[in-house]
Length: 273
Image (cartoon, rainbow, N blue to C red; front, side, top):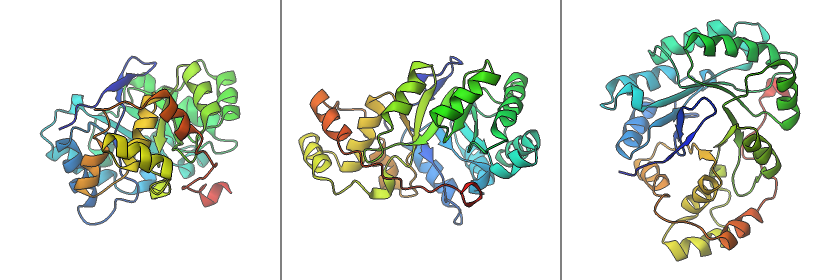
């Protein structure tokens, strides 16, 4: 079992540098099985969202786990529809009910819905003040969105969850966040396998006895970025956790930096296009 280090959020809570993403894990018992394997491999962070339609499964997996609740870090997110109709607190309560939890460790604004997200943030502030979310943050926010948020709120998001991987190196946004005490978390950190055949990653991997996925994940955590790769396969879940027993050199880090080609493996939701 891997020992997974954490980073300290601006709330002083600890968030693991590696977690399990469960996007599209909706098959029979799929999310429960994935979480069980992840916990056995040392994972403690589980990332879900109301729109993933699997919060109930996550809740069942948490209840069945032998790991104490206080050792787990559970994230979920408010979807665009709830933002538009102004029902953020109701959406949050339904997420808690589905998860069968008294609180979550992190609650995120899933997307910056134009004309809505600043008011949504104020609702998250109230949820945070109530203790039902230990930390609040955002997802898919660009610098402009964050600047607008800072103009209306004194509470700095604990996390900005963005797509980030060797083919999409959002270094300017990452630096902006980290300079302001906002932790960066990478979703789709494996880019759905899009960089696994890159010679740079294969060559570096050969040196360390690691595969391209492990090299890509290591590159991110070495930048202080938390990663939440999605997998339902036990061997991949285990493999993705084996990234804390080696360190890339500065030259290797820069070589991977140079792979950036602004490739996005995830699309913008239809209702935001």
